[in-house]
Image (cartoon, rainbow, N blue to C red; front, side, top):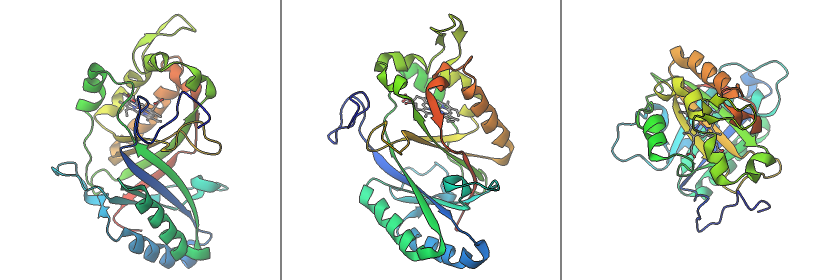
Length: 269
Ligand code: HEM
């Protein structure tokens, strides 16, 4: 690992251990009419053995450890490339990382030249900057997961942080998630969690870290995932706008967003 501040040792350390793995697979097709049937049958094939999260509602006592969620893009901008051009996406999750590689290989094999796959991996980790008070504020009243029949919309946003961010000490980074006085302007600011307040009870959210560490060439540091009801799509956009406003949330100076993928949850492709 090139950087000492964000590295990950497989045995786990104070920087956080990977608790479970996830993979987002985005599929771009040239001709949806021609490739549709192949994409659908590839989806059915990789779904075997995974619990379908479309009907997950957060009330089960024991959460299944291998899950799948199919997604369809709600809009693809003309001329979009890479991930942003993907009509189809799927999230697979497991505690066992090779299981996700197998799913990806199976998808690629089944699609053949009928579709192009872009893959982003993530890992769940324990919160790093959240005190018990912040936990109370941002997690205890968080929107539980709802069925895809109710919370129909989903967003995937990969992003990275700049080298200046990773060069800061962990304690200094910690400040940005709380209301604090901005060192640059000398003004009190809301910080990340309070800027995102409107999303706490309305957006189901998941944060995944790059399982192999941060600042890796050609990879993202994080991938974020959100679900909500149709009526809260506007809340999602508002929360993003608020986080991007560096006069409220100076942390975003250090953020480099990847493409935001806007989709709908579906039972199958
Ligand atoms: C919906 C309301 C949201 C709340 C309440 C919230 C709250 C939090 C909290 C408390 C943390 C710190 C986690 C820790 O202790 O490690 C965090 C981290 C993070 N959040 Fe949010 N967040 C929200 C929305 C968002 C959105 C919309 C994005 C992306 C556009 C986002 C991106 C991130 C990222 C990338 C991190 C990790 C930052 C790092 O470790 O450097 N969050 N969030």
